[in-house]
Amino acid sequence: MKAEAVIGLVSVSDRASQGVYEDRGLPALETWLSRALVSPWRAERRLIPDERPVIERTLIELADELGCCLVFTTGGTGPAPRDVTPEATLAVAEKELPGFGEEMRRIGLRFVPTAILSRQVAVIRGRTLIVNLPGQPKSIQETLEGLRDAEGKVLHVGIFAAIPYAIDLIGGPYLETDPSVVAAFRPKSAVKSTQG
Image 1 (cartoon, rainbow, N blue to C red):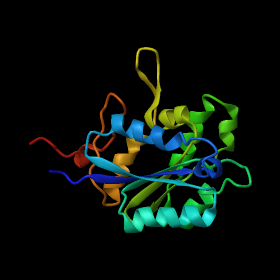
Image 2 (tube, rainbow, N blue to C red; image 1 turned 90 degrees about the vertical axis):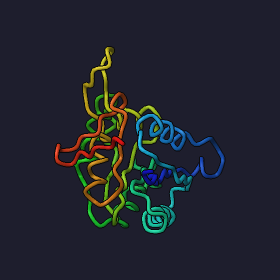
Image 3 (tube, one colour; image 1 turned 180 degrees about the horizontal axis):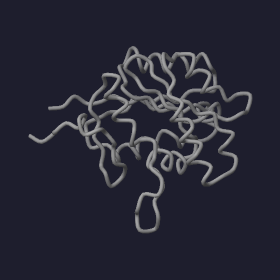
Image 4 (cartoon, helix red, strand yellow; image 1 turned 135 degrees about the horizontal axis):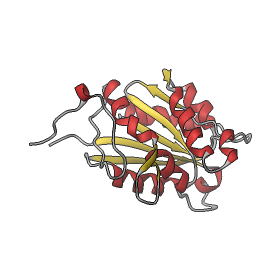
């Protein structure tokens, strides 16, 4: 029996964490991952305010204490004064992976010119990949899964295609995806047979 991967899901929102409105980021992430992943996994969920020390402590807890191989954050990546998720993420990082942020903005710009205002980053802390995602459920799906035409042909690959191999490279569990949602890309030499 394969060990289940632990994935941290963090929604950063002052108002949602205070109960002013219902958080939509965590359910969107969990729903998407349930469709995309075929290997065993479980979520560690956190709904926290836009407070940099709280965000930093949460990311450290999920990476160092709970052993998450992957942490997704949603919210707090714009230019507003309270948007500090990228700063908190970089503060706990050992390495930055700039390609993720570049690609997330490229996907977003296909829909709205204000995607250029997004400051999402992706980093490595130990054996954990931490990725800042957009805040809206539709944007979360498009960013992770990519874009398809009316016939279902992939027009633009989403960022999740690269995530399983990134986790392989930092010593995490072998994540497998449902290719009808998103096909994980690995070099042939890195593909494991999971039959039997």
